[in-house]
Length: 217
Image 1 (spheres, rainbow, N blue to C red):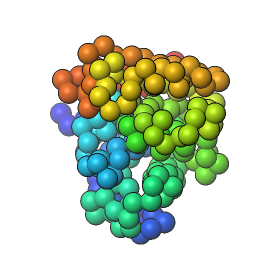
Image 2 (image 1 turned 45 degrees about the vertical axis):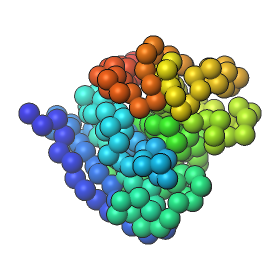
Image 3 (image 1 turned 30 degrees about the horizontal axis):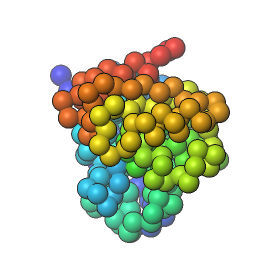
């Protein structure tokens, strides 16, 4: 049985139309939560169809939540052009606003992979996003998008960082140092034998993600 049926929608973004996919589990017509998932760097092939992004969305469906995946400005059918993270953060806020309007009683989960993890982190403390119930960042490229740990505003919600110990893009040692320098520090889960793109480890990613989303529920 299909867990969730993808529905393509156009969101009114700041730079024009944003291409997005909304999915609602068949078992949750009125979901108690929805997740907005931010994809990897748009200039390095990142799209909303990235396998890590879709795996995160699938884990949310297993937890009974709806999901919104979207293409940043200039990606796929989304209008506009790359804006060095500033506009991409606002694109994510547009997706969040759509979720708030669609499911006004649902709590918000934020998630992102690599570059997308940084976008999700920025949104997690943005006034426009409203209250965030939990934040998941997978192999977030923190050192590439924040000058120092002191520049990061730590969200008040539970925050899990999933990091592969064999990551060839995001330095695992640097990820540990950055996470440890934050106050309060996020929960950091290091995954042995896992590289940046989670080749052969998507089931492991889905299990950890689903467990985090359902924790305490």
